Length: 553
RNA sequence: UGGGUUAUAGUGUAACGGUAGCACUACAGAUUUUGAUUCUGUCCGUCUAGGUUCGAAUCCUAGUAACCCAACCA
Image (cartoon, rainbow, N blue to C red):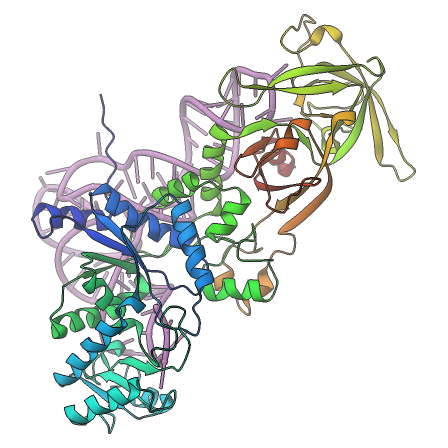
């Protein structure tokens, strides 16, 4: 038996090495979101990586909210983040908050001051920026850089006690104003913000910066592998500097390339703009790349996990085709979706030789597994898809056209005998005769047809609303265009169909079940549905060989 | 123009000095009561130039390109 061995990504290699040589007995990772927005598919990559490592190597993973900036953070985001991580199928060992550590962080800052490695700076933001220099020119010392330890201690305590206004003073680490790494040029580690915090309330008026909170929180929790994205590479040196100077648990930082995907944007700032400017209806608008948006759209947790597995983990910048995500969701839904019939763009098919008032119940397979069936009622008048009839058939056309025959899925073969048109030339009805001996499952007609189409009985049909989604942006890389990214939004990303007829079995449709509208795609019920109105979202279309055939001409 | 990171088919990702493989996409075909699924096949790649070696995607040298860093954001 050939064993197919999946190769390790570079972080798994590091973990295996650390475990093998006894550096650690078990590993501890963490997923550290800032609660200032909803999670998106890029976060899913990080979640799958961090929690996946814990699972794969018998370790644990904490969920830690990096809540050090009270002005942008909110419990609404905390709640959504927890829901999304759980929905993706992961359980955290502990739910922590950087704000849990504010007292310890304050103590660590005092320790740094005492060691002569931090000072209070009264300079304005502009002065600090000017003195910082540029990547090609070294910075210069602030005049406050050499304050005594005692004075720094006194000033820092006063900062904590609210003696100064926002922005009046900051606490800076004393590193090296000439360092080639800009982040080592005496980084700010505490600032004054008299703002209400979602968890600590008004207890604090100084808050630590990312660099003096993230690594220290990792250390407090004894995180072994602190995994973040590439843009934090310049912080790595500082991360290690604090650990060394503070002599705390040596967590190690590793960086991987964040996920980028075609036809969408992946920055919380931009996504927030789309929500605020009403280009989408909400964070969970089905067009959004957010976890909640994808969930509402009908993507499964399984498909997103598979996607994250397929894209891999590496250090080079990447741009993943949206079609890979579509492939993953089709792959999963094909196995699980209930097959049903729905006519999105209805036109009437009248079976002239079928008795008035007669109905028949047909069994139709509702899943991929043999034996799963549901009952679909049939009658003289049916709704069929407008695009399944062509007055003048195209080449290789094997659906309905004058004189042509098709199979009505799970029912009879019908032959088109004519059609009706209105004054504008639009087809208003198609006429056909059915072949009684061609009944599905007991066909003795001897006729074989190439095409099979779906249908819904007019008298049994249930009216529904269907929302079709297309890519959010009309260009592959909205981030890499000139001008505002919003200029590249796809105006046709949402199409609402108000007159869709679905088969009666869908009256009991529920939010948890994925459906395949045969030949049309995968759909799910939207939470906007009510007792008297069904609303479906199209998750993704089916692959469509015919559409490609047409495009070729 | 300082520092850092990265370069393998159209897009991702393997190969750890020894046959450049896998997935998606694209294309062609078989099967099909979903033009779906399934199955078969095809196209396409080691950033460049030198060097080391029996042998280089991998090691060395020199280039080139892309991305990140000058928020009291994370």
